[in-house]
Length: 549
Ligand code: AMP
Image (cartoon, rainbow, N blue to C red; front, top):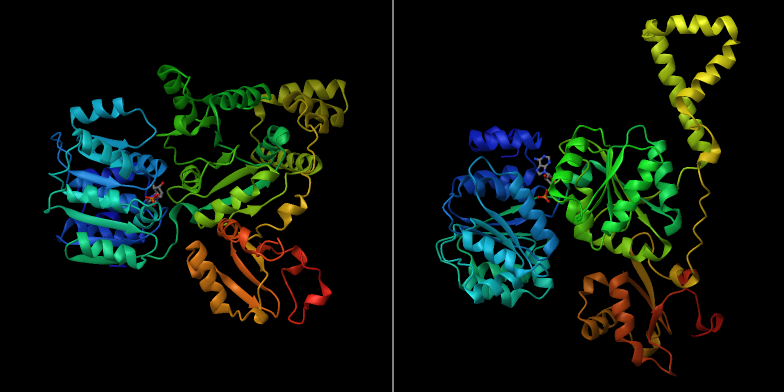
């Protein structure tokens, strides 16, 4: 099976192969190689261990679309943990549709139900939804799921973590027995296996390594910058890049509009796309963007939905995404179809923790870079111009301009002519004054410095040690008992006579500190963040050398 290198070896129809070609997918990803033939041939249910970013949506989406009829009956239900994922899956499936008009609808909470009701009434073949909202529709009788061909549980572990198990069971109990079930999950804890055993028939298990399609080809960078300097930082980044064909994500419509205007004012081919832009205008802007007449689009998440352009060189999060799913979704717009891309995220100093949370949850590697200095930028631009002009000289593609050159040479010195031509062509491009100052981001406060390190973990100080009869095991058990945190997350425990240390992911660290707040001695909390100098504590570190807090 591993030897399959082409989509046309998987058993898909020509119609679907055409869609894949249009999408720009060159070869199937491992999860697709394994899942598609199984779905097209045998009848068993499937459990797939794969993360978002591995191409799993197309892995189930392509064969499902192949086998779905355009008859107004809901034949496919995909359950996803969050509204972002529901939208993402629905969009990806929509982009895989052939000419047969199959209805695909994302259904999630927070969106007015009326629109969903109208659409469902007209008949939708594939429904992608979050468990809560799907249950709402089932209770109202506005969705029927008793004629399903496929039921997909996407990111099942996330759904269980979010406490959706009862909702899922209620939904499953209303489905017909003779459907095929697919369960995808990044991890396979026993709870998932139990769920599968309870509701699924005979199933095949598929596992792929967590190599991500999107992230593989996407270089991920973040810049720490004060809010008021973001625009200047953005301009410097655009200027230093040889090519910048990008989608810039803004949090609000207003921000997107301001940014689009400000970039245009500064001379870039930019525009804004958001909910207040009419459909006509939207289409015109997107057309220009596709033709690269507009090269930078400042957009809100909602407005950027459905934009599917393969060649984007950059995606830039002008404001940090709200959650890891949204991050993965946004950056998935670049580095597509075998092309390299760069994902840039701006964070203000106070957003560092949020970024670490995203990094950890999305299993992403996001490296920090410094905003280019003006001197560096100007040097770079000069080098680029020299290279470009040298190429024109080598190719001798300047014949039409020779008469003007001779005229000018008759009256002026050659160095002055060249400098004047550069000014004429590039205006103030090489002038340092063109760039505003960017303030250094102040070093994070001491308080923050006690917080997560690059790996997103926090070292905790626990005021219990050997003298209190504590061992590594006992400590992990105690934390688990009080907080229900998985003991595998409580790492690198060191127990000393009077106290101990442990590394935990920072979100869990907050939880632990909160849980033990009232349990200390002498009004001192039992667990606090370790001070930076304690992060590498020496074994002979004794209580007498440090004051207890
Ligand atoms: P997913 O894991 O379903 O969220 O997919 C992640 C991204 O990879 C989406 O943007 C897909 O369009 C893209 N993708 C899926 N399959 C392929 C493929 N075979 N080649 C290139 N990109 C793909």
